[in-house]
Length: 192
View 1 (cartoon, rainbow, N blue to C red):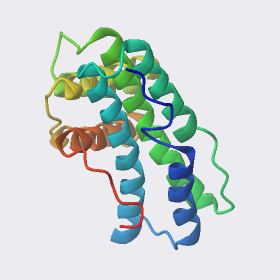
View 2 (view 1 turned 180 degrees about the horizontal axis):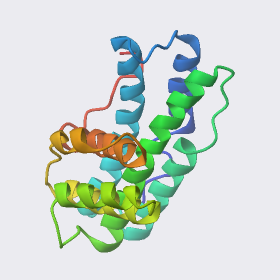
View 3 (view 1 turned 120 degrees about the vertical axis):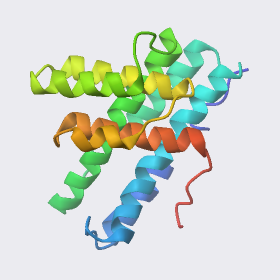
View 4 (view 1 turned 45 degrees about the vertical axis):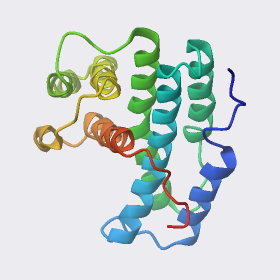
């Protein structure tokens, strides 16, 4: 029943993405650059979605699923070294976006989907909490929204249009990648 660690995502895979970022000229305004960053983020979201799906299908028990998520988090959220400050900031943005996806996956595996609201209500609650500088509550609200995505609900990105740029906007960006990953869990080609 147990899957060997690293089957879902490897350090080598993450490093391949980072190497591509190091090699390429990155301009977030440029579509190809933006696509590379989005693919990096989506690729991780797909791995998270696969772990949760395998948990739901009984291929992983709760402990194994949480261990896989922890293994993946250790790879993706570890400190990255880039000589280029701008690239470092862009990778940091991807990592920040993914923090919420990890929390949502862990919450979903441990406690199931949130029961007291919609995706949109949780995201609005997160934005309100961020406005009051309660970042723990903001992250908790975003994670709750994420549990609903795992349960099959969808994220309407219109809700993001009302959110001021900040951590919640980054986390919603990560949830958008999760929604895409759950809708179409095809592996993003590293060389594509």
